[in-house]
Structures are given as structure tokens and as C-alpha cells.
Length: 360
Image (cartoon, rainbow, N blue to C red):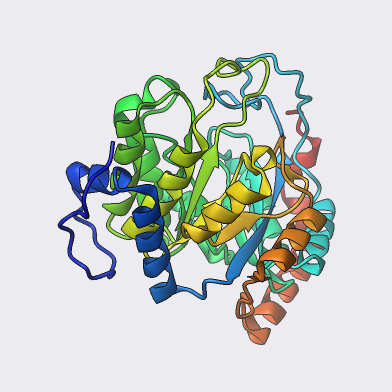
């Protein structure tokens, strides 16, 4: 099904009043027209040959009480994943240093929790301070956050918080039953209120219909502020999860989702995220043409495979693409303050709960 050019205002300034019909019309454009429009929007807001690079580390793996049907970390499914304790801060900092050396500008840390407990907060707060002192942007995904938890993370200097909507509100109950769509929106509001940037997107290829992909992007684009990062994930079908046999999504439908996300959220980084391991170089290149300008870099995304860093560098070289160079995530004074705080914490850490001693 094709459509003529939609009667949408030509301005590429961010909007927050998208209708379902406007988004449907974009999805229905001829493929070449859609990519041309998306690339034109992209060039108005970004260097078309720069891609922001992030590295993601699982700091606590498995035994999650949520029942997300796509997730191998859920305690509801037997996927053969070994649960792990919360990583020691020293190991996290070492991984962050290695990521920076390979070109990452942002270091993301994820824990398989419904929500961080009070006794864990002091530990992850110190983790943020130490990683940020390296001059990296910091991001965490820890599950749902109350306002006071968001404030505490913001106070430690956390730059981004990731909390995906996953899919449309209509399809959500088919994917997750242990938390509501409103729970997710509430966490996003708490993160914004704390002054942090938002990383929020979804997963496609979970058996949703085209209107669910439309609904997800409309929900994201109509938030009071667009997420600064919008990860678009292709379902990674993990044996043992309820979605291990879901029908594959047409690659062109995935690329269309990237393109429409770029048009609807023109100033956001659109991240080509999970599922890249199963995309050939040509598909990834079309995603970059459609407006994707952020990737996760490294061999693993939490618990699923990801192209190796060397393969990404080779593809970048062939495309003439370079890593986005960000201003240092903190000033020299802020970095010095962070180091001082970390040292002070080390001197008094016996007063704090040591999360590494808690069984998962």
C-alpha cells in the first residue's frame, strides 16, 4: 500500500501533537520518498556522517520479577541464563575505561530489577559518580523509579535514564502484565522532573500489528519533551521466552520505523539498538540513511549478542561514517569534585550496604 505525500507542515521543528493518521500516512509513503524525507530532516539537525556510540554493561543479571515476554532475564522463564550478583564498582569502572578507549562517549549500566531497593541506591549512586569522573556520559536502566530515587541519581550526576515503553498502549498487555503502561509513563515523568535526560523507545517484531508501531511512535513524539535518545530494537528471539517463535518482521518495516521516528522526533538521537547482530551491513546502512545516528557498541547488549566493535569500525570506514565527538560529559571541576566524592565514599564505605554481598 502506498500513499501520496502527506499534508504535514514542512517545518521540521519538534512537534508534540501528532495524530495517528499523520503517522500512518508517513509509514505508507513509498519507501524511497520516506527515506528521502527522513534523511532531509536528519540533515537539518545532525551531521549525516556522525553516529553516537554507547556501550551497555549488565551490572546485575537475571532473576527479574517482571514477566516481559521477550526478556531472557525474567525469572518467569527458563532460558538457561545464569543469574549474577550486582557487579563490584571496580569492575564496572574498568569496563567503562575500556569502552572509552574504544570510542564510546556514553556508558550505560543496566540492572535486572523491578525497581532499585533502598539498600542498593547508595551503591549505584557511587557507581555513577565514578564512571562520570572518567569524562563519559552516564546512563542507567534500573526499572521503575520513584521521584526521590530519580532525584538521588540526578544528584549523583546521572545524565540519562533509560526506560522503554516497549510497544503501543493497546498491545502492551500482550507483552507485560507485572507493571502497567502508566507505571512506565510515571517513571519517565519522575526522570524529567529530576532534570535528567530520557532514553526511551521500544521493540518491534513482537507480533504487533502496524498500528502498534504507529501508536508507539505517536506516544513517544507526544510526550511533553521528546526523549533525547530513542532506541529502536528489533526483537531478539531467545529460546525459552514466549516469543521464541514469533514470525520475523520484514526488514523494510523495521527501516520504515526508524525513518518515521526520525521525522517525528527530529532532534532526538535515534538508536539502532538490539537485533543488529541479525542485520546485514546493507540493512544497517539503510537504517543510517533513514536517520539512525546512534548505536550500542560491543559484543553484548545486556544478555544478547551485538556486532563486535571491530566489525562496526570496519563498516563505519566503508561508509565514511565517524563516531560522534561529544563535549566532555563534565567540566574539569565537576570531574575533580566527582573524584573527591568517590574518595570520600571509599573512606566511609563501611557505613554503607555492600550490594555485592547480597544474593541475586
